[in-house]
Length: 428
Image 1: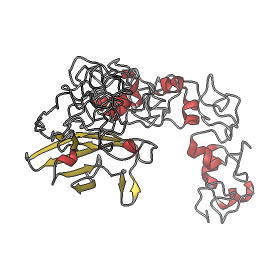
Image 2: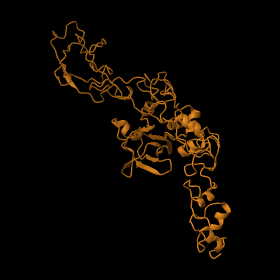
Image 3: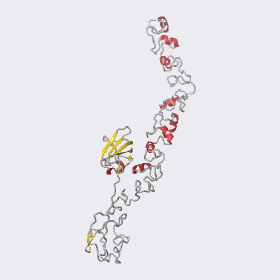
Image 4: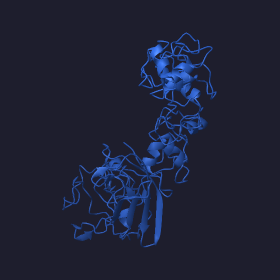
């Protein structure tokens, strides 16, 4: 046996094989192994099924049978050449070893694991994911921060990052505590997202507890104030010109003028919430602009002989009778304590059309000199820090806009030695 293949040189000559080559047909089996398996030592594919004899032995198929499992599919085309019985077109059994509702071949086609009922480990088996339209290979199909199993348990849509379309992702709502299935969690007619933008509580219909719902409250964060007559965001009690008519409600330094030899000084706007009126010289409750007889002397202003000498004080040129008693009043302006409470907006929309939303606003921060504002990402990396913040940060870090998501903030107030912490949500 010159080639040590288990077949004598004489037998090799009789068989027509090469006595000096242990594998005459180069199929991966020695001539001796071919004799043992009953295959042809001169034919690398004894059954002509397209698979060499050596590969068939390695695969566990029969090198002498082109359809080892007898399922009607040639071994070279059969994905499962040793599985018999009811099969799919590919030749694999329709069996479901992991009992996830998907047969083995379909799992192979989907890229899922036929031996694992939940390939991506999201708590939903592969069969249910196919029915739901979610991705059995991605634990979070909509990439909102909640895995598909959590979304199904919560009743949210695992294919929609914002199930209730209120502008907040389902994950953000679970952090805040609002309902990801309800556009307006507290039913106060303001969406959860808009409440966060305004700084009101999306879980309370009356954020400041003044008895007026946020929907109708002009100042929903100030329990002491109900009115903002000119709509400038400053409550009447703090606004020096409630009606925005250009005449301060209380003029600390009035403009004096001479009236019949007497010095008269008007000290306040008698109609602080009426932009068309500011004075009532006869005290009848009717503003001079509307009153046809300002001094109530029985003579209509158009026939009254005396007018204010300094018309720069009275641009309307209203006549006033000098025979009336000169009004002299002294008013003391109340001391207004500055509210140093800070109200950070929980939402930042960089690049938005609304300037208030495009820059992170911390209401009241200007009343706290020396304050330190810091923002961190979820990995704990500091992405922003500023002393004496001016409400002008647009969500940038290293000259690039930060990705959408939740960020942790710390605001240190030196006067009280307190640190306010919370979450900021960046959206686009």
